[in-house]
Length: 211
Ligand SMILES: N[C@@H](CCC(=O)N[C@@H](CS)C(=O)NCC(=O)O)C(=O)O
Image (cartoon, rainbow, N blue to C red):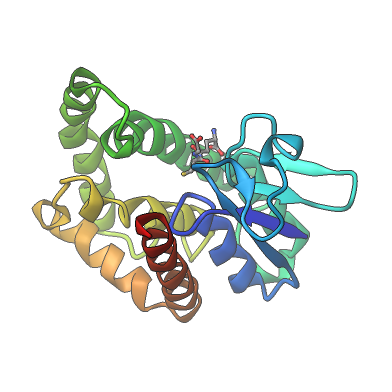
């Protein structure tokens, strides 16, 4: 498997899942500004026409896109890692969480707040959604260690998205249980490893763009 990623972008969730699964994988960095594969200069649109990460190359002919699908594929490919419930209400609950994170948090709030081309009106609208969405998280994590019963791809995705708070003026300390959850996840060895590796690549990218 080959994960096309951009440092600290949502593709970090898949890297965390792959590390948790102990899965053999390659990681190919994409420059989302030029829309090219960093090392080779290949046009990323040839691989994913929407030029979005995560993009998972499964083999030479097969590519899978969309966070919610990619994460479930990784979990199902490595079942011994128990990164996703396999059936029934627990599986549906996991999909409920993935949908919530993808639409209500990732696209609904953080995308407009982080996108420098988003108009102020779009950012203002996104900010109106913050209290209710984070109150839901606060209520859940006041009584739960993880999103589900144990660490899962949901936590990989949620931790990745919460990591953007610092860059978008959302102060996590307003929701102490969410902040505690985030800090707890950051201490998890595979999360820390993935975060640290991508932070270094992100800093490199910032330096490269500035020069
Ligand atoms: N619907 C896609 C969205 C993925 C997405 O927004 N990825 C961002 C990084 S977090 C991206 O690649 N942005 C580049 C761009 O918008 O051109 C999914 O959930 O996988």
